[in-house]
Image (cartoon, rainbow, N blue to C red; front, side, top):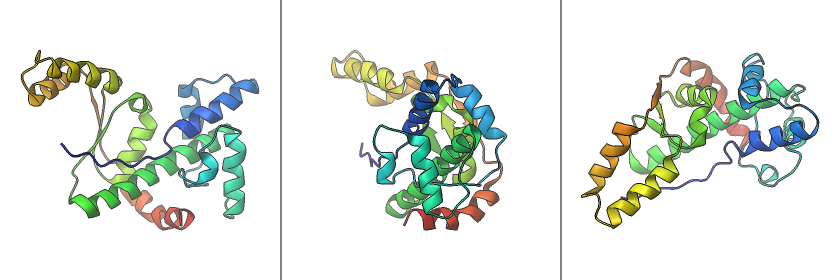
Length: 197
């Protein structure tokens, strides 16, 4: 099959923030960080996750604050505000990238998320809301499963690619996220787009 590929910064931003916060004595789990972000004001501050300043190892919370200051937005002051900024910005970036793909390939009726990010339920829901499409999340270990089954296919232990896909679908759980509030994401999109140009 043909696979279009577009890199987006992804949860690297959150991982780098968490690494720094842990060094500073805030040993919060990812689940706790997500809960703090739920309590933060929506769409207060947004970033372009693909801006060059976010590509390298370093003080990611400071870089996020600097981006917000340089774009005349409220500066995230709490961990929850930073995490919410990351989640909402990623979902909006996924939406923008999806629209680019639709322009190239035609209609898309769902998003399928695989890998470790499927464990971030809030981001999966935000993605469904921002894109106004259902999100199917899972499997978590997509890379390992794909590697093993592709090797089995190459060794002729499996008869076809469709059999491989059937095995994955039958053995790995997925979770469905339906769009809940797409209008709010529609309203904020022009502001996000202006930050990314």
